[in-house]
Image 1: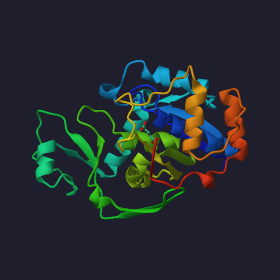
Image 2: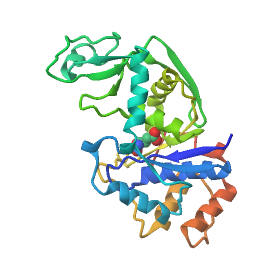
Image 3: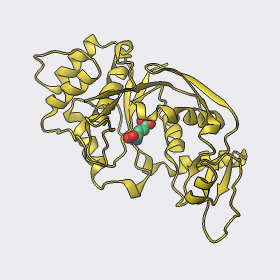
Length: 286
Ligand code: GLU
């Protein structure tokens, strides 16, 4: 089976150091395996989107030497595929409509785990749709973070379609990972604890589960995650070498001191690259 990896930025701001690390890490793993590296733009949440940022991110990547093997897949154009997946869940009675407000959920302990809505239906407003989550433990081996186990009931019945009719990230992500034939997901460790829910959704939809490799999360000097929406640590595509060298160093990847272009730097990194020697750390401070 051909290795297929991907980088899936959300267009909520400019490319920042944390997402450059995910892009470089996933690119190195794909190229090392002789596989393909694909792009997906996670633009399924218009209210959180920053206009122009999808284009800016896609334009920045080649400046860092990161060139994908196919045109990017845009989640905003995948509505029919998400509708079809949702209908399969509904036909299998795996989802239920939910009218609970945040305040009601807080009263109920913060999570929804009854398998049905605890609020009476309100025909005057549309419901969110939640996946009915049974008492099940999902286990998987993360290539960097080691064996993982999660009792899914702790996360509760989670939303797959929001009140506004928008699909939730978990649903869109698993449908698209399957559609793009992704064999290994390489991404930031902030998504490690979302992975069991995604694996469960894959099982509900009859989709295969890729391998997972969660890279250490980049933290700022205050121990906070670098956030695109906060515009923290944007990387400058006009000066790619500095950020690229820092991203490679962050991933403990040796490279050449004399490389004079991003492509040459990445080629030198690839020659020495061993995915098993990426840092087995949950987070790392810049
Ligand atoms: N779009 C997500 C983000 O930028 C990443 C999704 C993923 O890699 O599964 O945080």
